[in-house]
Length: 190
Image: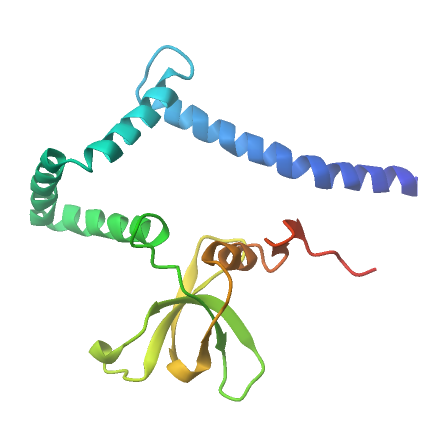
């Protein structure tokens, strides 16, 4: 019976991540495919990807920049729309694009002289505008969650980490079990 349970657990550990990943990808595909309401399966997905790519290409042209500037000015004039647009633009820009903000991983000593430390991302090097000279802002993502907190620390308690931002984010979000260098979870002790 123990052998059966061990095989079942091994099978579950191997198949569950694959099945869940495929399920999530399928749900995303179906959702995107349904946005345009085209009657052929997959056509909505392909057309949506093509349109997004076309917008990206057009964004490099002078004409598009002028048109986009006019649309952006119109959005800036409506209070609720301005708030929503700017918030979404900032959040997306923080994670992708040329102006990524989570590109400076750091380790923070939680209490001066203490041994407890946390991994995060330096988001602002100076807080003088808030009357907090000598302090920095550090974003600490939460494990297994898409949330986090911005905490303020004296700059001497913050040390840069010599690792890529994506590796540090994967380590934090996974609760410390993912080691991107080996691409496998930490091995449990017997």
